[in-house]
Length: 276
Image (tube, rainbow, N blue to C red; front, side):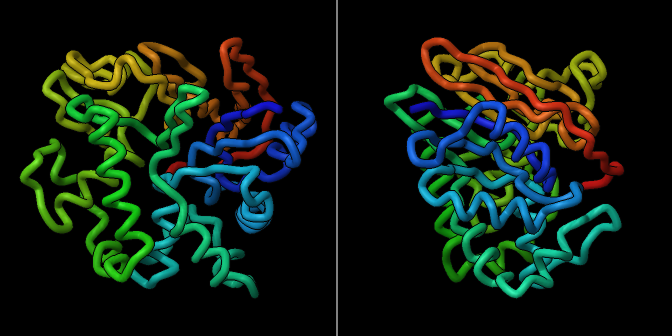
């Protein structure tokens, strides 16, 4: 029995299946964790989503920004970008089933026995793991309930960019979702930056990767995340980035979890144009 955490797939279905062949994945005994962004920009979003859904309890996934963007479009609260490649899902006979499955996925997955937590992008330095669990549940309640439409209509904004316990309504929810699904850099005070997306060393003065923030409350917790293809596979301060740029001609990475971690990568021939 093995558990593997896999970085952003974004509709690159064929590399995913090759990677699973390489690790000899057996859905009867093994489990896969997906770090979000299952769909969009790659060529086979529909096949990817159907396959992961078909795995049932053998797979665990968290929602990424591309997944949430898709839900906003599916619910009629945004128009597609030119680079979006999920029209196949919207036009599929089982579209409603796929949409309902996706909106039920969490923003945080944890396994206390294995000792890992997984989010799509990051955790603000002000949040403890107890905070992170609470805010994930708060957001998941909205995504799985009647508030979803009103929030999706107000989801697209970079503000507020700094967490405050007093935040309420859509401002509070937007701060939570941006943290879970879009975070890369912040400043020393924990103010989030959504403009800088490049590799370490390319960011504006005063910005640091979220996992290097001083006084970060989750430094003792093992955190897995994706979202940051220009960072690539990277481990520091108990935080491991799994996004090795599959969508950009890099590779798709699986990390075997446990005392003795093992990294397995599959070359990827998927390419996308910049956008969301």
